[in-house]
Amino acid sequence: MPAATFCYKHAKLLPFILIILMGFRANSQTVPLVNAFAHNDYWHKRPLFDALDNGYNHIEADVYLRRGKLIVAHILPIFRRKKELERLYFKPLQDCIDGENKAFTGLTYPVTLMIDVKSGADGTYRQLECMLDKYKSLISGYEDGKFVQRQITVVLSGHKPEKLLKAQQNRLAFMDEDLIKAQRDTLSANFYQMASCKYSRLIKWTGKGEFPADQRQRLCDYVHTAHLYGKKVRLWNSPDNSVVWKELLSCGVDLINTDKLVKLKNFLLNENKSFANVN
Image 1 (cartoon, rainbow, N blue to C red):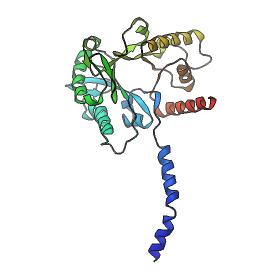
Image 2: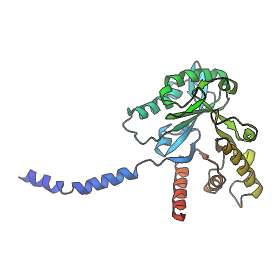
Image 3: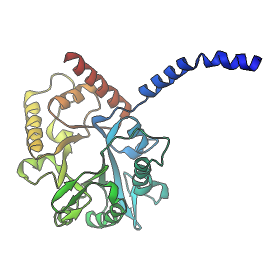
Image 4: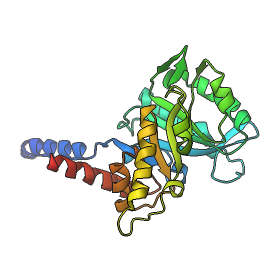
């Protein structure tokens, strides 16, 4: 009887416990950040997953070809198996998509993986092609003249194999264009997915004082042209502060480049709340 009394007393608490758990689960859901770009993602404690946990769907990895392996590193790497591109990114993404990773279920699609090629363009791409083919069912492609959207879209920057890609009627990779040249290039988004450049090539303002009108107009003009051709705009090496971030968004910049995942996430979530309150 004492045991039965104990169970009955606790049973009465179940509805309250369930409400608490449901509230916790709802608050822990990842909110996708459409304007966030995880620069040098592999520097974080948990490559890929720190970004995904914070709602990032655009993620960058620097890659070298060494000894027939694609190694993730910022500078000339010493071969380490744990730093292989497949092991850090493609296999974990496949596990999430297939439901094999039970600890992470908050992934939203599509995920754009930018591969910044640090070694020879053509040789690195040939090796990458083999890996992309292995995960073909998950990767967006250009197939017989049409863009096919899948869960992962691969975009190449750095040392770019432009001639190789332009010659391919069917491929599983796209290109990051130089934003400065976007005004002169009329190729469709079937080749270029993004248009990027270093922040200081367009803007000298660091966030102190007023944003100079001529610099603002110059940025807006480049963004407008890139958007005409369906390209998302990103400025890398921009100041990591909310004043600059707010102005970039107001000029139509699509992706805010950062190493500070949580700081940018909090800023974007607060911006969304402010916008919702105004409307």
